[in-house]
Image (cartoon, rainbow, N blue to C red; front, side, top):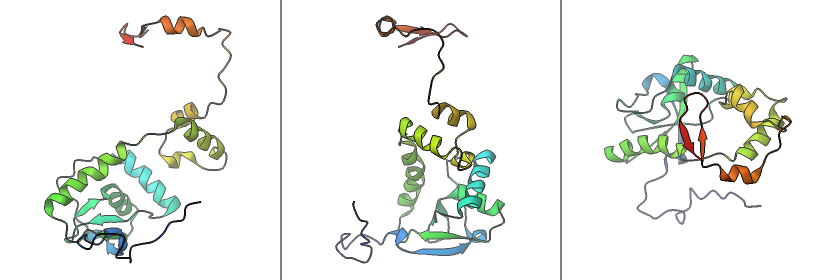
Length: 185
């Protein structure tokens, strides 16, 4: 088993000219002092804010907000909105010290986009959801009940029709029964 080693205090972990990591120091700041980044392109719907609020009620505030040295939010706009709607007074923050304006602006985009580039192991996710289904409120995971149902199906119903692998391989297009559009297989 691999052990996590904290090297934040070690000079060997980063080159000498690298500024300190924001996560090395977590502070608390009043939510009322945090300023939303005016050009944040990421949108947060009321439904998503409600999901974040439910998550915060269940698990507390688990991810700090990343702010500039002038308290402008770099990452965590949704969490700040949820915290304010919950009536919380303060939040854990990390300060990006020494970051240029361009670095801050690029990170606002990167923080939101990089998470989208991940994918799910559907089989493993389905197994996890199946095992948790009776023990925990899965609506807190952000998946809809329909998505959870689709991923936790353990057995397909017997429709009385045999699947012919050779016939399926010969089908080049699949036709939509609603609009008639043909999709390549």
